[in-house]
Every structure is written in C-alpha cells, then in structure tokens.
Image 1 (cartoon, helix red, strand yellow):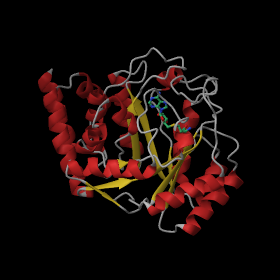
Image 2 (image 1 turned 120 degrees about the horizontal axis):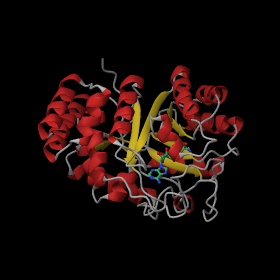
Image 3 (image 1 turned 30 degrees about the vertical axis):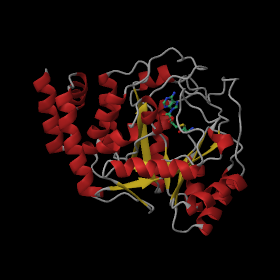
Image 4 (image 1 turned 60 degrees about the horizontal axis):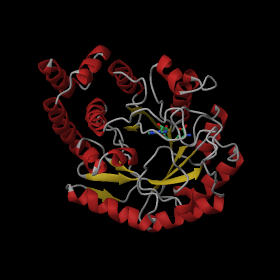
Length: 351
Ligand code: SAH
C-alpha cells in the first residue's frame, strides 16, 4: 500500500485534486516517503505563490464566555472551573495600539459566543479600529451569528471571518457537539459570509475524537469545493474539564501531513501554523511553515485574558508579553529561511 499512497500523492501534486475515497487512502496508507514528497511539493507551491513571506495576524482573545457546550472545548459553558472574563472596547483598542506599534496589520478578534458583543458594540469597535488604522485588516472569529449581523459587521469594516467547520461529516459533528449545535447552520454561516463579501476561513481539528481517514477525506473534499481564502487546522488536544478529558490528542505528524495536502489542494490559501501544533511538538510552527503553511498568529491579548482563554491543556505562550511573543516568532521563522512581513497579507489570486 506504500506505493498506493505515493501514487496518490503524485497525482495530487499534479492535479491539485483527488476523489474523496482517494484522499482517505492517501491518509490511511501514508508513509514517511509520502509525507516527504508532499512536503517538498507543498513548499514549492507556496514559494511560487508567496515566496518566503510569512504573514502575521495579531490574535486578541476578547472573551471566554460562551453559550455553547462543545464537548472538546475548555471554555464550554458547563466548565464551571473556567474563570470568565471579557475585554471592553477600550481594552481591545489598547491591544490594537500596541500590536500596530509592533508591526501587526491584521487584528483577529476571537472569542466564545458571548451575547455581550452586540452588533452595535462590535460595529462601533470595528469602525473605530478601521478609522485609526486604515491600513489594517480586521478578522472576526466569534462563532455563528445571523446573516444580518454578519452583514452589519462587514459594512462596519470587518474584512475576514474565521469559522472552522470543525468536521464536514454531519454524524461526526453530532459526536463533537450537543444537539443544540447544528451542522447545517455552521455550514450555512460559511456560505452567508462568502455571499456578503468576507474573505472566509474554515477548518477542522486533526485527531478529534471519532475522526477517521474517511472523515478527513470529506473535510478535504469540502475545502476543494468551498475554496476558502483561509484554512485553520491544528491537533485536537484534550482539556481536563471537558467530556473529552481522556481522549488522546491529534498528532503533529498528521497535522503537518495535512498542511502539505491542503497547500496542494488550494495553492493560494492562507494557512496558519497554529499554536495548537506548537503545543504538541517543539518547533511545531517552524515545521508547519516548512510543510506549506504561511501564516502565524501571535497572541497579543492582555496577560489576564491569555491565562484564561484556555481551549485545551498545555497551551504554550500564555505568559508572554506580545513584544516577546513576536520577537520569538521572528527568530523561529528566520531560522528556517523564511521572513515575517508587515502587511495586511491578503490572499494572492491565482486561477
Ligand atoms: N467561538 C468561535 C471560536 C472558537 S475557538 C467559533 O465558534 O468559531 C477556535 C477554534 O479552536 C475552534 O474552532 C476549534 O476548532 C479549536 N479548538 C477548540 N477546542 C479545542 C481543543 N480542545 N483542541 C484543539 N483545538 C480546539
């Protein structure tokens, strides 16, 4: 079967597409040789589109209040041990100010689904940030909202929206979420965001409980058809106060393999090497970049937020000041022959 996975890897490198059952075989029968082959091809593709540039997104974790109860997530509403906080508009503006001074030109506002952040509050905040920093992009990652809300936030100036689809298999979705979460609604949100005009990001956890190669194949097929501008993947890591506390984590090996696969499917996708990847293996971000990723997301939240926005156990960099965080990332990226650039980092349009 060794030859089969290599055969499929070659086909993917040439055609940027496989059938859904072929993706499953590529994953199931993968070997070190296949991984190396894909990595080299993915690195070439990403270099041909983005050169050696690595884009930076300043992540601001605005709230860990959440109305949802996702089985995997440390800030789920049933986790009574989670110390809740939310940042005010002033706190968020202060993060943008210090982030801007560090050269950050994209601010990602991420949080639980917290009704404190009304459309009016967010629209005011977004238009203020855009007025102060017209050369910056704003990315939102605030979960599912109605289409009218998404449109208002877009009109206020938000440019991008990250909403991982989590899994493209409806049955699997039901195993990761309680019944009040709807797979159909999550996917519909992605289409709504696209229609409104956002640059859209989807994505999934690697090695989430009950995930199989066939399910990942569906995720890849979904990426191939939806063609998001951005895609976030990282290993699932258990959190001690969740129903999945005893589930084993996803591996760096499979995550890195899939980063290469995704780069080949979507040559110009904005693909972060995530903190979760760096949490499961030393030099995770460097390995992710070398395998085809082209974005890093230093955390520029205030320390008080960082220490409480804990989605999974062992999260790294929760005690570092943003200045140090960025300096450390720069050093890491330099060490592998890439360079962090200061720009909005919009997707390159390829055919
Ligand atoms: N409320 C927002 C932001 C969620 S947090 C939303 O619904 O989109 C961002 C991502 O972290 C999630 O989409 C999920 O894929 C990931 N995540 C959550 N818990 C995790 C865990 N235990 N291990 C790894 N990733 C996790």
